[in-house]
Length: 220
Image (cartoon, rainbow, N blue to C red; front, side, top):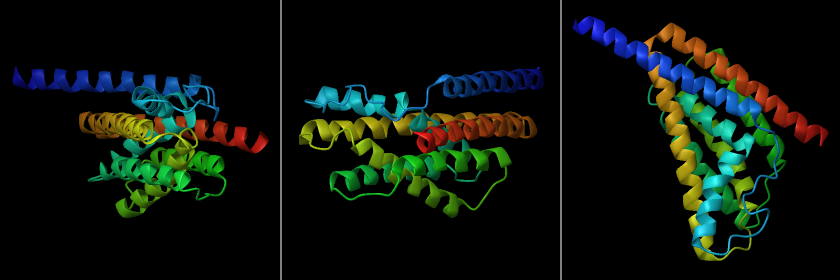
């Protein structure tokens, strides 16, 4: 009885994880790759509410940012203590926004963002555990460029909406990325072999998103 119940629970987790995973991939593939993704239509947030709303929305409505946020969590699931990868990425994105606010220029941010999606999608598609410090360092480097892009929306904003914006995009990125990490962990724990196949499928889909974003940058 207990064995049957345990089997049913594992199967339920696996089915649910697959559904969520397919939903994530569908969302990414159906989204349009565009960099002009700001909920206030380019207007600076004028108060705390607008700053928080803009920060929460920016990483979600931009396919390039959303794809990498998800990828960071899924890649983390491949490694022991891999939860540090999404955390490192989010912290670095705050630093990247700071660089933009301090008027420090990073080269070709849009192109580097597309490269980050392709790279993490490839890591996920290969499906092998890599060196954690090295991958975390790549995640932090990606975070600097993603955060730099976020900074464009609040250059010149007052301190209150600016802080609310930072809190908003850090919170939503961490929530989505940790959710993806939990998904990856659940898939692998339910069935390691099938779980890796699902993650590899998501990795190839992310590679496709990265290629689409890169083509938009290169071709204009």
